[in-house]
Length: 276
Image (cartoon, rainbow, N blue to C red):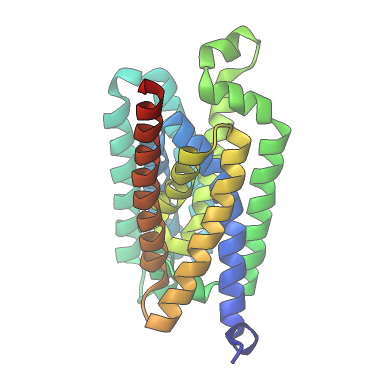
């Protein structure tokens, strides 16, 4: 039996995983290189506030997620640039306040929204054709801006002072970079949900970083790994009748542990060979 031809929802789920993995691999590589996983976490969890408000006022949760993610990215970027001494505390406050606002709006919304829960915990098997087009548009926007400003993002990611000396407007590109992270978070929310979004954003890129030396190759490998993890996770969750999102993250997590062990073994072997 050909499951993909028999069940259209599986086709849509696989395509959603493949598309989201592209943006995930590109922006996740920046997040890992710049070591801003905590900031990305603050952005992602603030999204719940936008979702709750959108649901309360009768709008699409995805639209609310997009607005909240961009607002949180700009706010967190401003905090980073202005109050570095209290950065962790203030980002944690944005994280908590965003989630609290979402919970309050959800509590005040009549009825029980399974749609919102799918965004919170993720269910890639329920992605619709309309959401697939939304993922594609966001993906193209992220990729287009990264290609257009690749050198500027590269300079800002590795050495902000050098970028300033080269005349690059660091503040603008830093905030734009965080906005692209926010767009990627919204992409991944539809695949694995808010709770697990940071894992899928960072794990493929972290694995790629073990094996390649350049940012471009890291992005390409991270995207391919994301595709592999989402595809394997969907298949395993379907055959074992398990929730898709946790299975996807378990596959990615196990792959990361194996990669880390192998990378350390290879490093020690090279050290021994150099010493000998």
